[in-house]
Length: 317
Ligand code: GAL
Image 1: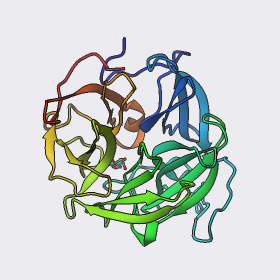
Image 2: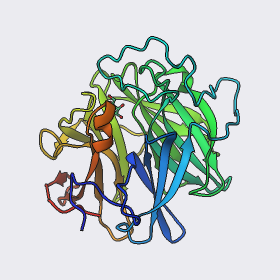
Image 3: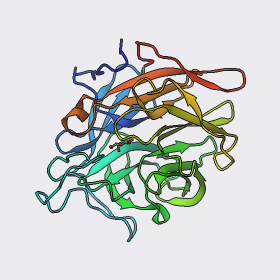
Image 4: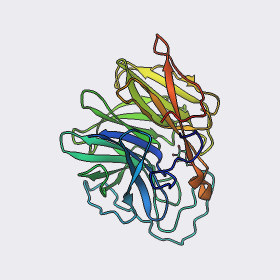
């Protein structure tokens, strides 16, 4: 049994570090990717056949990962330059481990067209949150070492908290907070998932939405997000649309005023009709970050598709 807000152990008995993460189904396994800031690691991958017992497959992106440029505009920095320079931690700045950048909220899709696993994440330089960039990494296998393909700003837009969504028709979307988090951008990806192809929406302008998570149920698109309060939890809200590039509704609350002390990471829709919210219960910045746990709750829907989330001690996965 796993409990919300309690560390979850992998099959070796070690706490799972897959924060701000995402689960991808490939073959007979689910792959859980997420932030793992231990040592030189950036992203860890775990796999499971039952969504409950998780085998640590290792670090898939680290400060030592191979790099390969994809475009002239991408920045391949995976280690901080000027380590030891004057860095003054301030509000919303995580004291970095020496030499590391920040890779946050990694999401991975399998691109049928290229046979590549393509990771998108939020990139920061490890000293502050001024880079506000998206980054990409790719691999031939779901749990092998990813090659870092660099960071960039989509169409020059700031890009912070982010997610990916793969639609049934094969179109993939990248969503990220822009304009110092005031707006949320929705981009359609290129067919190889290696770039944004079109900026299709600017949502919730001036509403400072973070931690986006998208899923589809009964032909309707749902987008969960949090307000922008750093590591501190706040009231989760969601919007709906009939199309990804259509008009999105106004925001409606779900869960309680702290989203049960969590912030959305992703929503899982396994084939059995269940819809599962996975949130991070952040420990905070600095050393407290490593105490971060998870909140996994089943989402409920009424006949009109309105979404509700009740608390349960037991984790939904
Ligand atoms: C949160 C964000 C996290 C992390 C944190 C840093 O708002 O959702 O992913 O960036 O800020 O303070």
